[in-house]
Length: 65
Image 1: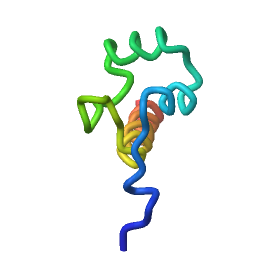
Image 2 (image 1 turned 60 degrees about the horizontal axis):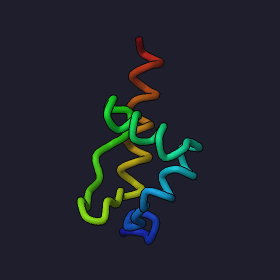
Image 3 (image 1 turned 90 degrees about the vertical axis):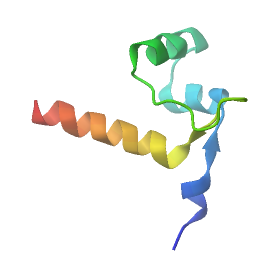
Image 4 (image 1 turned 135 degrees about the vertical axis):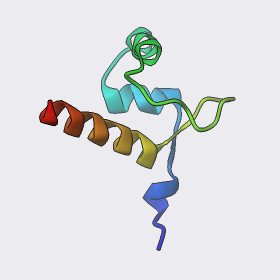
C-alpha cells in the first residue's frame, strides 16, 4: 500500500528548509554531488522519499567507513 508521503514532491524552497541551507549553499552541494538529482527537471522537484533514501544511504556508508 502506497501512502501519500511516498508521493510528496519537494521544490527548491522545500529542500532549503529540509537541509537548513541557503540557496547558494544548496547549489554548491548539488555541484559536489551532496544532493540527489531532481526527478522532475522543470521546475526542479525532488521526490521526498528519494531524498530521505539518499541521505539514509549516505549516513550508513559513512558509519561503515
